[in-house]
Amino acid sequence: MSTAEQSLAFERLVRPHFDRLYRLAWRLTGAKAEADDLFQELLIKAFGKLDDLVELDEPGSWLCRVMYNLFIDEQRRFARRRMHTVEEGQLAGDGLENLPGSDNPVLDHERLERIQRLDKALARLSDEHRIVVLLHDTEGYKLTEIEELTGVPVGTVKSRLHRARARLREILVADGTIS
Image (spheres, helix red, strand yellow):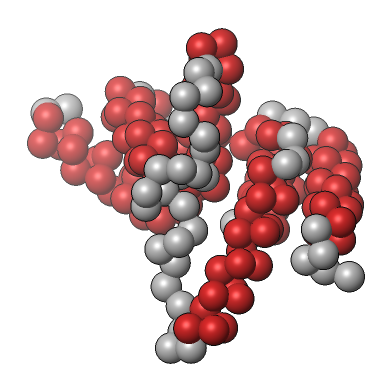
């Protein structure tokens, strides 16, 4: 296959999944710059595996699984070399402050505060629990898709989702966000 043919095949197979893949990258990393890096790393890896990708019936699931594995690998590398020089969330333009809102600044401010409290509560969950909640409740992945994506059995996914929701509720009640 020529380079032009490879590019066309890659475009045809991967482009329909861009939005979902980028949202997954953002949900996994929580920051635009890291999501961009993860997304780009996925595209590079996927292009290198184009022959395998062409043979798949459902390339979207495979791409999600590869992205998840890339994320986990990076988390493990990062955990070994992490330095606490800048607190997470301190970088400008890296958080929720840039979300669009309504024409009512009071409602926008209240909405942003609720989102920030929820984001802080999510950050207090373990990685395993946070990922399951974000994938299922935010992105709408089915339990079987999460099983396929993470390699964790459906029963364990259900258990983590239940515990994560209970812990989130506990945190939000303690913070006074919900009653």
